[in-house]
Length: 310
Image (cartoon, rainbow, N blue to C red; front, side, top):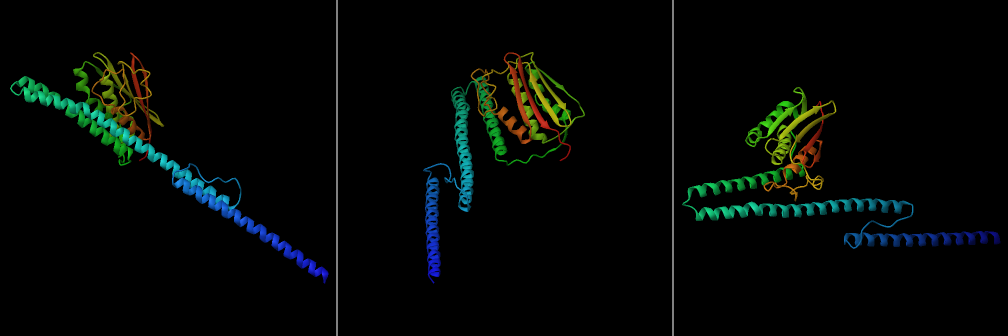
């Protein structure tokens, strides 16, 4: 009988200890949940960064780790949104700054036209200047719209097999008159049978911008050579000029929007042609590189994947 009572007593003591441990663990988990809830609340209110502190194992820890993963994803999205807002703010500031110059020029030209209305030659001269500034504004706006559409993924490239020779001949044809007027030589080299899968309109824009950039930075008597190389894996389009070259300080910045070198003599460009070319090439899953030696010329190389199927 005494043994039975002793066993019962031991059982009750064991149950009491187990119950105490369970209650203690429940209270500990409750505190951990409260701490986690407070950390989440602080995170939502942006009073702290990071996730829930957790160095233990178990189902609760697994839950906390998953919450931390969500926090990491949310932080990444927040950083991306912040960078996008900063980019938009800077872009708007740049656009505003770039538009001030041609608009101010137009204002001056119109004032002169009003004062010299009786002088036909003066009116004609400043009307031509006004037209140039308007063309400059239109070009800037069109380039910005194209880049905005590319950035937003609002453009689906209409890719089709194109004969590279025919495509580049068409592009060069748009600039041959200017080259002739400025006493510069445009040369085309490559295999006439090569085929490239691309969006003809957009790739023409990219290569055309490189040719225009070469014309802007060469002098009378200089040569601009456009060539291509084709392999089963890669197609290269190379635009090379014997012009003034790019200052080493500028090489890492020339694809930035609105970048203007302090060494450049170009006072009309707004720094959109090269960034637009880069965006178009990257939309084709390609890349663009530049090599230049000051005083000896510049080489732009476009690398595009060679595709055999649409």
